[in-house]
Amino acid sequence: MSVAYRPGETVFHRLDPRTKLWCQVAIVAAAYAYTDPLPLVGLTIAVLVALSVLDLSPWRILATMRPVIVLLTIATVVAGVRIGSPWFSLADASETGIAAYRVLLVIVVGFVYVHTTPTRASQAALQWLVPGRIGRGLAVSVGLVGRFLPRFQTTARRIRDAMAIRGGDRMSLHRRIAVFGIVVLAAAVRDADRTSVAMRTRCLSWNPTLPSLSFGRLDYLAIVLGLGLCFLAIRSLL
Amino acid sequence: MLRVEGVSYRIDGTTVLEEIDVAVESGTFVLLVGHNGAGKTTLLDLICGIGTPTTGRILVDGHDVVTNPGPARSRIGRVFEDPRDQLLGATVREDVAFGPENLGLSRDVITNRVDDALSAVGMGDAGDRPIDSLSGGERTRVAIAGALAMEPSILLLDEPTAGLDHPGRTRVLEHVRRAYEGGVGVVMATHDLRDLDTVTDRVIGLEAGRIAMDASPITAVDHLADLGVRVPSTWSP
Picture (cartoon, each protein chain N blue to C red):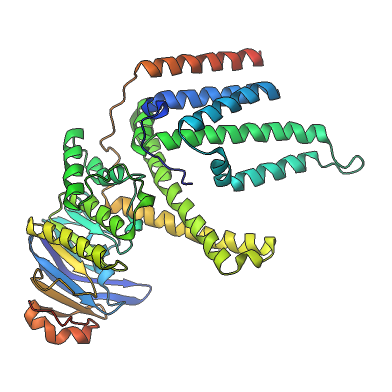
């Protein structure tokens, strides 16, 4: 599954990108303020509802995020390991595990944003948020990353498949990671170069025509919800 | 109009292009032929400002591509050999709009240009399709649409039919031909001359970075085999 924009008519597609950015901030604040499992269950349900509205399978998203999940799992296990008896502390591991789970939720929320927002709309929102040259620079950077990432993701998937077809799955895990890492790194440099050449050839501009942004009724509702989440997050910290 | 004046290009001690002089009028169809490594892609790259000639200069409608790349590039439409290298949008419409948006045009003009360009390549109803769901031929057509949306005076195509099946190839050539008939100058690097005899005005042959031939299609026929190009039996310009 590509981490890229897909057109649609859902509630999330209709929201202004500034509202979506604000809601993301609110969700991140809430996720970090509440360390208990119960509020995280609530947040998980909200995320699952969002995925179901977008007709996205949580399992496919988790599959896309496999490398991140592996890293977070390793971090959780390492946090629980003790030198000396008892060799493993479940309390420490679960604390890190909850933190890792929050990271995962935040990434999925980011995925929902990317899936429902064209790159140009994100650029417009950023330029509105940070006016002037800095904003333009940020917007161009977002444009670059937004166009590079899906391409790189496709390349990485192709390399993985090519390795598997040529017996790569019979290599040891260590060797597989090493070979994949080297090839993917070279491909990343090549893809970055190609993206940059394509953007220059197609007249990359610091001041392109961006979509006009406007808040609708739905946006105000979402902003209020975001404010509520932020308020709860701040209250829990005080 | 495109003018390539005394262009040489050397990289890492290797001469890739040597003293290239070419002028292409708008509304002309030029085939660029030659063996692999003859310098065709490098020449097309230099024309759109990817890389700087070691000597010489390239002008597009009077604008130097090195010293004044903005106006020069906005007059060039480029289609890479692998269109995946140039598709930058998540959807077809987003991608075709990328160039016109960079020109700072109004939203209405952009919408019209995108609609016209997509219709011109027969993909008027594919605007919302994700780029990664397109076939090879469709990708090439979207790349051509992206180039046409810039309303270029010259279209540079690098092996646009490579790897396409017969229907895909026919469709791509049909859309290129339509752009040419609409007054756009076309420079097409290719090894495959099939179906191009009736449109080609001129054939330029490159050999080891030099112009080995610059002739009308009728005159060029006898020299094409020496340049690694197979002349189709139906070739009758």
